[in-house]
Image: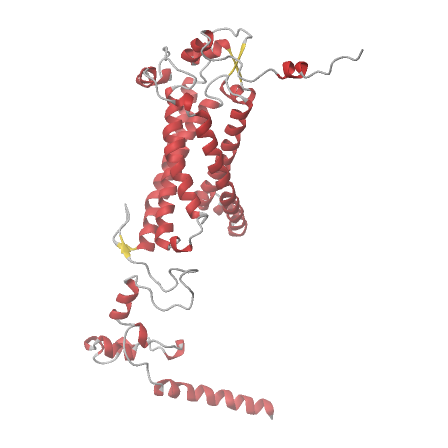
Length: 388
């Protein structure tokens, strides 16, 4: 009995629903203010088939299909905020459904979200990834053609301290942070092309989430270590007149010829000022903004975040291209370079052949060959006097 009664009620509701929908009065007025609530079953998708639909005014069309009229969507596309129950201090764009029309470099004149998508998908991803591959292939071809830069003279056995412990520690902290950021950034930007197809969505999604989290936390570490590196090595990276000769001769990379160099050659100095200072500070500033470390929520609008992302991507890709060359020359590209940063010391022959101006300053006594006091001498000086 109860089951039969319940079935009758359902059938009655189904029969009465269309009639109720037809008798329901549409909200008066067009624009955003005319929409109070809507039931998807009450929307008439075939309203454009009604007689005279094309001749209807926007006000008349608003009564037929609330929300489907030009003035309302013109207001939505204007970027002017509508009503939102969220406070502006927490969500400054809560009332903005669609961003204003803009034109970013390389995009059409369209809404800001679509313009950012076009820049990212049509420029940053294909051309940025292509540039990284070109540099990587160029380095590989150069190594196959030339091989590593070797020391021609015999080692003397006399060592010169090239880097102190503090300098090496600052370098390795900064280098480690950069490698972590580079790998995580490459996976997040390009991973869907070479990892997702064979890894699958579940594992790739988990991996990118982990790398994104690591990226956000390692970023500030890189920022602090970058400042330390810039302060530590700024003095010896000042440009000198002989650096022009080094640049004019291409550093002796293409043809074996003498190229003068101080403690750091002109290529390393360009890496320092352009790659680390200029591009590095831009990448750090935009990255910290994307990390939302500035305690002002009103700054973090979608438009500002989109601009920060584009600046961050361009600066990081250019920085990575330069550092790829730096890593090559600091490891397999130059004999003895990696050992110098690992142990802090180089042989006199290495210093004379690769950094002759620096070596001459050491020979003349203008620069000390040993900048860190001998630990054994320190221990001897602090030894406890023998008891009588």
